[in-house]
Image 1 (cartoon, one colour):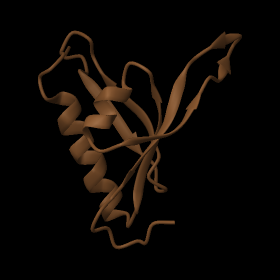
Image 2 (cartoon, rainbow, N blue to C red):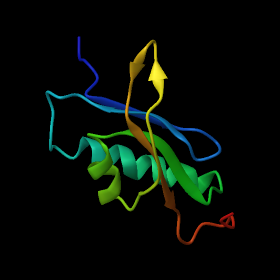
Image 3 (cartoon, helix red, strand yellow):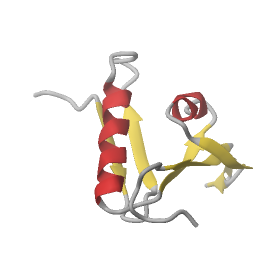
Length: 99
């Protein structure tokens, strides 16, 4: 049975809640394809921006797609500090106005 190599989703408000690419399939364009679909879907929903809470290791990837760090954070999840950043990308040419 085939196993997924990646998945992602975007909420109606432009928040990317899940973004995953298998470590067994690096640098094959899977992340790039997923990001293109998310951006397209956000534009169809009329969104002005994409946002996500991004791990330290994923921040360079998101930055390469035009995301900027809004705030560095260190939430504690089940007693473990998990450094991440709130990142945002303004969607140029979207029909909604940016706040």
